[in-house]
Image (cartoon, rainbow, N blue to C red; front, side):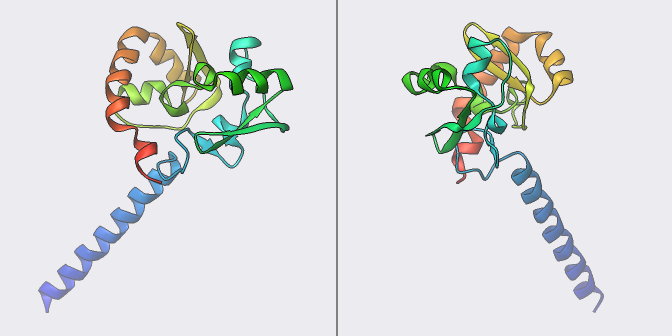
Length: 161
């Protein structure tokens, strides 16, 4: 009788742990059908990825300037930025699926904030927040090297649909 109670307790613990893991994976976008970090607002929270390059700052996209690419809705602040993206989406899309560059360098994924960004060698990198961006800036070349090594092997958000 005591073994049955222990088994039920362990089974309950396993179920709770599994639910917790699923919640974490959902939170970071692991089950997204998109290859890019996407919310209900669109890829990279509905921000205009071209604006980082052309205007030098994040800009919220507008519904009238939108396109679908890599399974996500991409929003732009104006028609010119939309046209530039359509011509060369790989040029403007953020690295590592728009997930936090610092997190990817540490072998996991995390969501990002539009105001925590940097362009390095013509590529857009996003971070979890400005505090994490400051950590990332301490050794950008090393973190990019580590993230580049990890990302092609895993692409976690792309493996699960």
